[in-house]
Image (cartoon, rainbow, N blue to C red; front, side, top):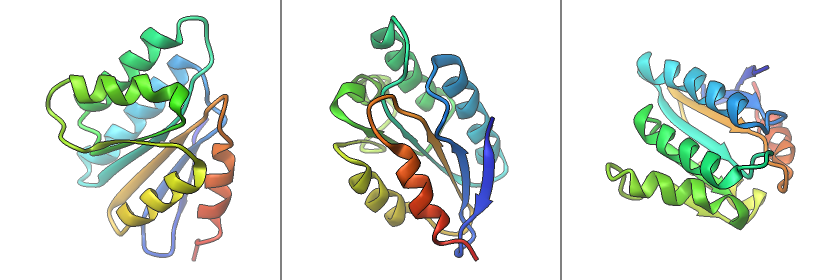
Length: 142
């Protein structure tokens, strides 16, 4: 399930921070891509997903980000770095995928990208408290 709220500058946040499985994250990426089709810049903040085959699934999610033309991918935590590498290897990106080590770093990156006509998706991570990112963003609602 994705909850949506708007920040004071008009940015839209898609809150899927409780979604940590491959299929749920992929579905959330598709929901974010719908905003791109409406002319929004898109940002996906993601971390390590749950599952038995996370290496292949992180790879698939990173490549999916590129194929769905999501503008920015912020990957939180070293354990999810495979998603960042896959996005880079897909070949069409140059710096749009960014690995960060902490939720605080992810927040700083989101703040640098946000604005009107920006949609920010936050999906869950089994090893990072991305709910903290959502709570910080909720503090900036109108």
